[in-house]
Length: 175
Image 1 (cartoon, rainbow, N blue to C red):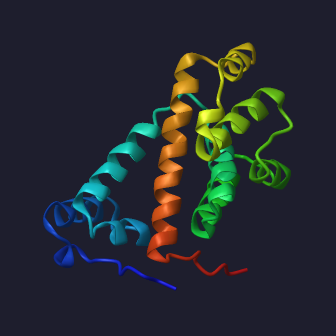
Image 2: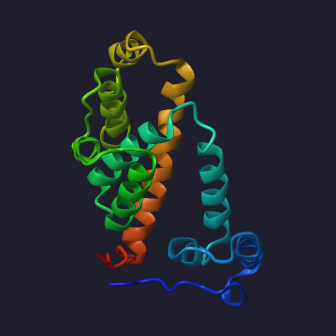
């Protein structure tokens, strides 16, 4: 059940009106989540900035989507799972890849190590040890990628938690 309403630019407070109008002028529309985030100019600006920044991570789009699927499965946001499943398919993921990612793993041991740590960053960050970071490095992950995992997890927590709080539900699937 929806708890917060989506806002049109004219209904949005201050900076949110400007941000929504800018997105609409460039893309033609805004998504339901963005329009609902407009209740808080600070939240909307923060989401947009973090989202843009995370598009520059050193990971492939497919692996970023696997991480998002693993994290969103844990968070339980149906809207995000739907969006990342579609994005994963667009990035070349097959159904097995998607199913394994939702279980927090991959057929590739290197990817599985990174995905597992990403889920732990979300679920139990205090448990991450020197050995865990050393293991990621042994799998060939750079410190840049290791650091960027926190940003990807944070972005997913932001969107998933917001959607759940606001009561946003997945769009109806048509077949």
